[in-house]
Length: 220
Image (cartoon, rainbow, N blue to C red):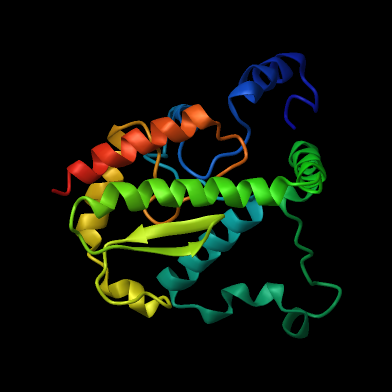
C-alpha cells in the first residue's frame, strides 16, 4: 500500500514468482530474506515471527501484554457489552481483500467441479499409499496408514490408531527418522501429513516410490 496498488516494479516481482508458486504452508527462501531485511530496517528487531494478518499480530501483542502486566481487562475493548456500541472497535483483517487469493480459490473450485477430478485425486492417493506399504513391508517395522486417500499419514505404531489419543502410542523418533530420510531423498514430507495432489504424474510417482524405498532402508 505504501507504494500504491499495482506498482510496476512490485508487479514485476510478483509475475517472476508466480510460476514457482503462490502460497506455501512452510517457510520459503523469500520469506527468510524478507525477515532478514525487516530486521535490518528496524534497529530494535532481533527476530520476527510471521502471522496471517495484522489483526492476528495485534491479538498476539495484546495477549503478551496481558500476561506481562497481569491485566485481564486489556482485551475488554473488543467487548461491546463492556465498552458500549459507539466505542466498540470494528475488526478488519489483512487478507479479507486479497484478490489474488480469491481468484486462485475460484479457479481451483472450478477445476475441481470438472468430471473425474476427485476420482483421480483418490486414485493418486491410493497409489502413494501402495508405494508406502510396499516400501515399509520389507522393514519388519510395525506401521499403520491412517486417514483418507486424499489426506493421510504413516505412523510407526503397533496398536490400532483410531483417534488422536491413539497416535500417542506411535514411535515418534522412528517417524521423524523416516520423514527426515524422505526429505533427503527430495520428497518434502511434513511431520504429520501426506497430501496427494492432482499435479502428480507417473514419473513423479515413480520418483516417490524410489524415495520411499530409500527412506525405508534407513529403518532396517
